[in-house]
Image 1 (cartoon, rainbow, N blue to C red):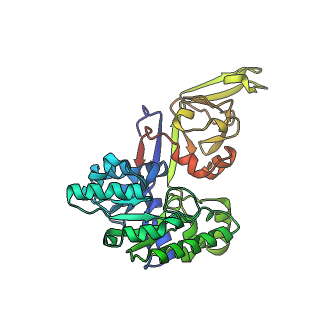
Image 2 (image 1 turned 45 degrees about the horizontal axis):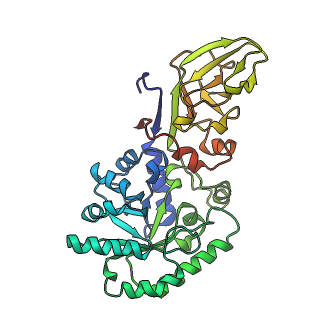
Image 3 (image 1 turned 90 degrees about the vertical axis):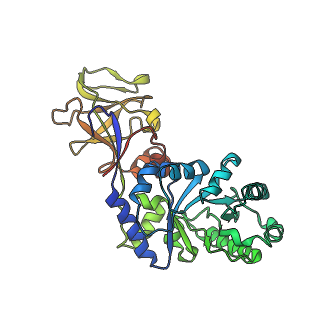
Length: 371
């Protein structure tokens, strides 16, 4: 990576493929997997991940929005693509023409699809989203009778029926078991034989084998991250041979190195005042890039295999680190913001959030490099 690039993300294809293979081995040959690459592949780079998964044995790819699906098609990705969450009516004709599977979650979206189908004389491949208790998009139990009647003569283009579990990443399990039961009842009442019934995310697919059905939506686990501490502990106890490899490393470099005298304040608000003369480094990354302000005075970066604590508040475009333990640090020297020595889980704990947010909020403008 040229030194003129101030910050970049490295994506390990070998780790990505390892996580997919390990999960497939855990599930067995009979379970199809759709990698979820929404939100710029959870910050890893949607196009980079899609190309890295070329020729892998998967059902296809899943995204959140119609715009993401169309971007994949424009980039030459010809695999099956499923839009899980939302599409704009203005995108619908192109989505159908491009053979992209689309979510239907209420009678409005169903009617919009019908109008486009009549206009272009081509049927959409739809996945019916059922709301089993997460209370996001989806048909409610009270909608099922009407939905069944509406689809009475059009069920052949229902490719999938699915839902989403609200508590699969947490204990206790009662809520998840209840949602599974609600889903089964709704599917039974609907009485449509769709090729793909799916409601299992990463966490559910590990902890609740009965949730896997015809298709598993593999999200965070694909990227080598655990959905929660509870899931990680559970997996270590029950699946000790199942190991994930983090796919991402986020790096930058030192923009300036200088020694600051004792008593000097560091950063906005002078939240740190040096007790002794200290060598500091300035890193050209900030919260505008996705390095969260809540990491101020908490996080560290890795340089020469050693941690260097963050000093002061994270700024919009830069932050400072303590280099007093470093060995002759130099301008341009690479540092690791996220990777070996500083994990997404550790950053999430410091920021009182989840690892999903840490990785997915890394700016899409930052270059992603496949290794």
